[in-house]
Length: 67
Image (tube, rainbow, N blue to C red; front, side, top):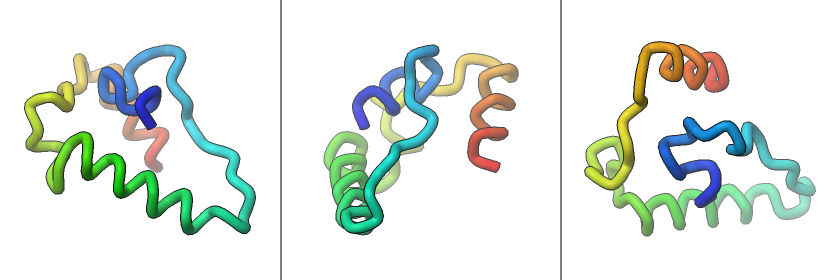
């Protein structure tokens, strides 16, 4: 998760997805949510330590990944 969230996912070496065996999928998701909460609080987008997207190109790229 650290690698994905450093620089708001805007580094070239960041992961775009995780390969997780279905037997641990739900536990993995729960742990990710837990650690995101620990690192950034309940509202990561309002945390000053969570960086802003640097430009429109990166915003469009990240938006496409979400879609």
